[in-house]
Amino acid sequence: MHPPSPVAPLSSPGSALGGRLQSIDALRGLVILFMLLDHVRETFYLHHQVGDPMDVAATEPALFFSRLLAHVCAPVFVFLTGLSACLYGANKVDRRAAAATFLAQRGLFLVVLEVTLVNFAWTFQFPPQVLYLQVIWVIGLSMLALSALLWLPRPVLIVLGLALVAGHNLLDGLHFDPGHAMHIPWAVLHDRGWIAVGETLRLRTSYPLLPWIGVIALGYAAGPWFAGSAAPALRQRRLLAWGVALLVGFALLRALNGYGEAPWAAGATPLRTVMGFLNVTKYPPSLLFLLLTLGIGLLALWVFERRQPARWLGVLAVFGAVPMFFYLLHLYVLKLLYLAAAGIWGFNQGRYFGFDGMGAVWLCAVLLALALYGPVRAFGRFKARRKDIAWLKYL
Image 1 (spheres, helix red, strand yellow):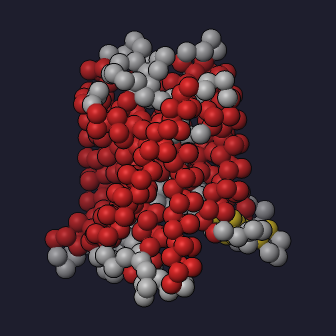
Image 2: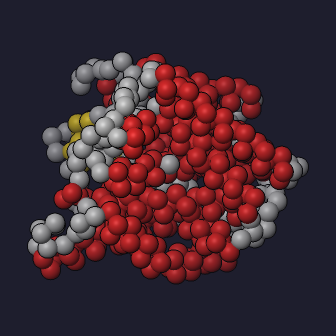
């Protein structure tokens, strides 16, 4: 799952122009580690899983809340992609043209990457029988959309972004059967489903696009908060105010038990009640899902802004500076570990290998993060030195 990073960390607080803000890379690094945890779970805990790890009635709290952490990843990645695109163009003579060109090139690159290296890392099938169009795909398509939309006046872009985020649930009841002229475009835009390509290949549109265009547009519109003329104190007040406002909006709307969500009800225990309240729809992301996750993301960015520069933020920023490299690296490392275990014990996960509890999943994720820190830092330094290698900016 994960995002492009057109800009990278500043060693001190201040403007992102001419460099990188440590807070942005640190936030991206934090959600990358949440993603790593979720992918360790998907690799070595499947034998314990329920059909849906967010199923309140059937899921243990440790699994539920670990999956809930992973929910923060995609919205933060997409929002920061838009924000970073704005900062990327800020130093250029024609900032919109520079940002649009980068978004179009990077977006195409991500779409191709999803259906090749990323999909192969998940399935190890060649030729593939199924292509899972997941978060890298939707970020790529969102970037392509933003490359056209960023020419709109900023107020119009904000209104459009809000309309897509808040209004797309009005379309939840609209469906088109296979064979209908709108089945394929609507499966890509809003209605998660399957697309048959011939007799041997199917596409799974895991991440419907429409609301994500709204998120990336709002991220781009937030770019001026980080411009050279913007005072850090003002930026922090905006991040705090919007983060709190989104979470309050989530709580109020969720309490009303309506619009775009399955209703929640009191559970057998207070903890189960909280789980039901927080169980919101990701595919496509409902308004409540985005209020909750983006609210958390903005508050985390506010905390990181107030704490930078800090050594612990620098550690997170190492992962966030080269997220695509980390994404590909961790997928293949996990797949090779799984295949090695299966080669030794056979495909008997749960009987001979795998984890019996979420504590072991967390421990494995921590150990993998420590093991991958060195290679990720080395690649980040290499990328920073070799500005002459144009393709490195895509990683």
